[in-house]
Length: 330
Ligand code: NDP
Image (tube, rainbow, N blue to C red; front, side, top):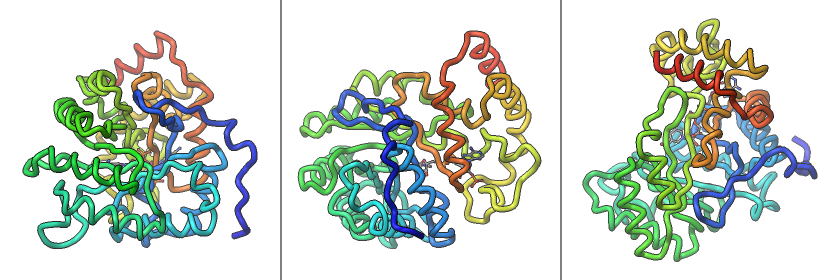
């Protein structure tokens, strides 16, 4: 690939939302590297997607220690993309990583101990070849480790300068409030909660969004397209190369068929709005101002380009809202 020079108009396309009551702004659409960036994937394809994203003003790239497969390989590949293309623009990037799921054998390779979190972040920094990440997340609540210990580990890495902000992921409303209180007392406010939120997964509407707002915490929605279900990807069956077709894909083939009836109806609404279903599904989440950003995945530049189109038609009429809610509640 030729030497990368980012587009000079890269800050025209995206808008940026303040993350809770922090000083940090995030693009309304962020890019996640959970799938499509591992050592099972084509490196140059991932590289094109990241370059395109940055050209469009997507400044936020989300990783975790275990993304791949193999675990760690997405961070390694992202590190290579940084080294080849984006290193000069480090100060324009918000890079996040996480620890919480299984990463290595033995009692210190997952969950929420100080031992695990600090070692894992050190490994992530090496794999990506960076001195610090912008956001370090605890990836999932740990029912056994005292929350104080986990939050102290986040506070510690922020004070060390290995992370600029602390985040939590997959924390319920109640767990979020507890974590936020501890972090506040420690002097490192909780920046953000990364949660599963889409038209098909709406648990955050029952308290989590309100709690986040109360504590001044941003919310970033992961799998906002329900891993591709909320697009036109599966309308004609399961295509070769799609996430549901891959042995390592987290979307299982048996999850596709039961969703299709609603997907077809939602697709009709999207067409009547003159946009793709993916665009409508993203706009639907972004209409709630408590949602800082939607964190999409993409297996091609074309998909990401399509998703960015959500920003062009983000409003909904009352009639559209009623139609959509009726479909979702069926
Ligand atoms: P999405 O719901 O956005 O699904 C992305 C997938 O949908 C793509 O890989 C692609 O699938 C398909 N797709 C995307 N855009 C389009 C389009 N316009 N038209 C048709 N198909 C499309 O998000 P992910 O599930 O990938 O999650 C996004 C990010 O969220 C992750 O990368 C990760 O950073 C984060 N995450 C965090 C978790 C946590 O526990 N904190 C858990 C899961 C994700 P295909 O490959 O079939 O082309």
